[in-house]
Length: 273
Image 1 (cartoon, rainbow, N blue to C red):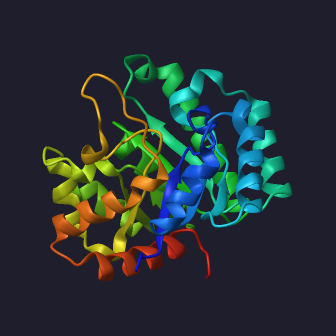
Image 2 (cartoon, rainbow, N blue to C red; image 1 turned 30 degrees about the vertical axis):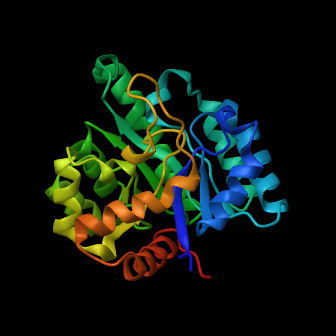
C-alpha cells in the first residue's frame, strides 16, 4: 500500500519537465504522492506556473496540484515593483494555497551588498503584507540569513506560519521558526550522511514540526543521483526516498511517519482534506 505523501515544494512547472510531465505526474501518483505545490519564483514565469497548475488539475491519476506564487530573493535583481502588483492580481484571481517562495538569501557575495540586501528585505516585507492581506501562509527560502529573516517575521508580527523550505539552519533557528508557526521542510539532503546539521535538526525538533519536499528539479536524493559530474534531474517520483531517509534518521516506521507528515502538510498550508 502506498502512503499518502505531500510534496510541499516543487518547481514542476519548469522547462526540465516539458517533455514528460504527465508521465512523471502519473508515476508520482502511483508511488503515493497525492499532492504537490507548484512554487513561484519569478514574475516572468507566473503565466507558465498557472498554466501547468491548470493542466495538472485537468489530468487524471496525478497528484492534486496547489499554487504558491512568489518572488524569490535569489532573483532580486530581476524583481520590479509592478511584479508585486501582478502577484496580488494572482492572489485575487486564482485559488492560491500560499505565497512563495519568499525570504532572504545572502549565499552570493553580491547579495550581501547593502543596496541589494535592502531590496531583498523590501520584497520580503511587501510579500508578507500580501500574505497577511489574503490570509495565506508563506513558503520561506532562507540561505545564510536566518537571523535577519526571523527578525523580520517578528517585526511584521506575521501570524499565518507556513514552511521553512529546504531548511539549512541549526537547531536554535529551527526552534525559533517553529515558535513563529512554521514547519521545517526536509529535502533529499536527508539521504546524505554528511548533512550532519540537518540530521541534528530533525532529531532535535520532533516529527510534528516536519514536512517533506523534493524541490525538484534540484536536491536529488543521493540514491537517485546517476552521475557525480552532472546534475541528475530530481522529480516528484523521488519523494518516497526522502520519506525513507527521514524515517531512518528518526528511527521510525515509514507508515507512522507518513501519516504525521501528511497531517503536518495540511496544517502548514491551512488545508482540509
